[in-house]
Image (cartoon, rainbow over all chains, first blue to last red; front, side, top):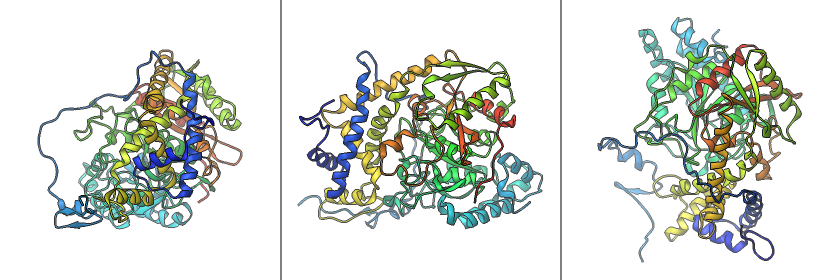
Length: 102
Length: 486
């Protein structure tokens, strides 16, 4: 797996990029800690490269598939009030969000 | 009788409730009194449902009086705070869901409710089930009822501790990499993770969907069998849930292990393991032989790669599952000028350190340029791990191992080193990757008096074999349960 010229698997810039992709605000202290933790984890998982998996199919799911098809009937309860009760901000029957178009 | 009623097993309580020697209200009150007495020291619960539990108990009493009550009618249970419970706050031990009140029940909660079970409260866990000690809870750690300076295990540590301390008769947990079995072992109770797809997960807050499974904690194997029968079975709301009929697990408990072929994987007796753990497991194997089972050495050669594969697959799935916590429809919102900053701030403040770490690792493993090297590679290794079990089960009916390499560790001991914490799941994680049933049950104590857990692993849908073998061991009196310190 990829390393940079100092042998590191991840750098601070990548940590910031991943944090943005994941929509996580990290403090400067958290970024540093994250860099060290991810470096350690990525070094650890490197051991998977000891295995030749060239001819191995990936497993995404185990177990049995249940009833994938059902009657096309509406089962939701009409209960907007109890759903909106959890909303951080709501008006009438709507969730309030910040303006997204300038 | 009444004050000690919380110490009953489910099987005992069923009998006493039906013979009217004990009322459901007396039983629930005994549990609530016990909870009041020990919670200041244990912290096994995030939310206690005092009034609701008593109301459920009164309803159960009426049904019991009519004489046709279902199995769990009047039985007081603790529910891991990862199950959606209608009208009762469900936090997943996270600040981001601190005030979330689900408008619906998880399928298994609805089933237990219909049976007349009593819900005492919502049990503590590692935030979003990510951890092995329940120290990652936004509501403080749960302490081990056998030694208050030690962890209860995790992530279902509250459920395990509540059962061990007789705060309830049984409990529900979830297990993604060992989160039922490791805390069961650490607290000295029984915990079973069924086959992947055996139990519906609708309404259970998702961590890693290809690994998550629901299961019970109990004081005896028989009680675990009783609970599992009520939990298992098809669900139109969960298309990953098997439509296979559910056996009467309790009827499988005939005490018989004669001729049972027990596989002992050589890779599970490794350096660094606490000697007393190995000693107790070896003694349990000899005990099985004395009861007429045979043991055969088997090999699970990819065991050493399981944790690496798990932490890529589980975190990748978690990074997608936890995208929904965005501060818009429910949960914590931290206001900002624009939507992206609102997401970032809400999630940055709402999630704890371990959850952020796993979201970051998972996002990285799925990101452009790294997907093949990390995520896909891990899925291929998962195939090899599953194949190991298929080959082993060609030669045996059941695999027996330790549940964890050590007994419960001290609070704080592993919090500064995530990798060390992950390694406590080394014997349980492969079972999730392969989707198999696994059960932890007590098989002895170390010199400090901490419980040691045996792990029984069955082939897919082999719950009856697992439960039968566990019950036979337990019934033979090989281990006497010791009182807790609370």
